[in-house]
Image (cartoon, rainbow, N blue to C red; front, side, top):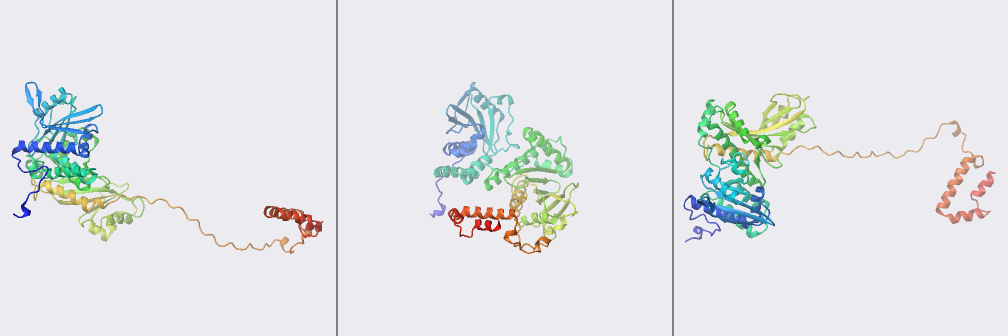
Length: 492
């Protein structure tokens, strides 16, 4: 038998998985074992939950008594450092299985009775807002125990970021983390991609197209939540490629009250037939805004760019066009002037390359900002594959960042430069005075003024003392030497 048909031995094999229970048990054991073995990976998952920076102990299917029932949470995580101890129960779902409210509330009761710190759930469900749990539970049970949720997409993204970008100190531990990544990426692991817009998708899409959707319709909030979940999923996937944390952009009000975000999306679908969201990419020129127009069948990605604060209008336009040398001709550019209202000017990039003045409405007005946008067809299918809504949105985001956004840099003013001192021309000889006193010729030394004689004598004496003090002393004592004293005598 040829070697090409041989199966390589794996630390976490995908073969032999029979049924959902076996799938959940193997995924739980693999994840918790790697968390305790690879310190960096375990720390990056548990630190945001309040766990101390100590070694992790992990267990699976730990039995607990709750009243007359005997319950088996899928796992338990414990971290210790000094006198501090942190413990969390773990409940895992794989595939399309969803978390059950009754089961979670029972685990919250167990954690409260034993003074555990948290309950962690792991499933393929992606909440619409970070920190929001996908399953509703009695809030009274959360007074002493925290409830956290990890999606399998988030776990996989963190594993890739840690191994490929942040790094693992020990090579053997890095290999172990790589085996977990390989396992979770396999379809049989049960860690699925985001592949469904929900049962209400078709009904909502048709109502939006017909203009009959109303804010009170029950189907609309589910689609709004799925759209935000899609943006979170695409952010995780893009972050894996960039090696950095990419997250959806939400206002403080939306983070504090997730219902406000859902209401805004539903209202937008009813009035304009669009859903809009944005994602934040570290060091990018600005948020990447995504608009899905269900009526026009178009998905548009755009970003706003502040114009340079100096230079002529055409110079500012050329500054942006130069940075878009790799962008497709179908990119749409919009220009907005300072102290002006209205939509501003708009033109395709291919035309602006030939004539930058097309974006200038009034040369006397200063350009304030630009908007760079790229549109593409929007899919309508509920799941994955050609013509699907999910794939069209994901492809549009990746294409816009790759071809447009990653090449744009913010304008910065040049630092002020020191002024160089001007070169002075060679000094010309002083002009001869035309005063009457200068026309009589040079006066003899005996007739020079007493002040001039004293100044000359003082300067000569100071120079002699400074340079050769002994010679001055000898000259003054010799009567036959023509020195300063002889000149003085002749003058008297």
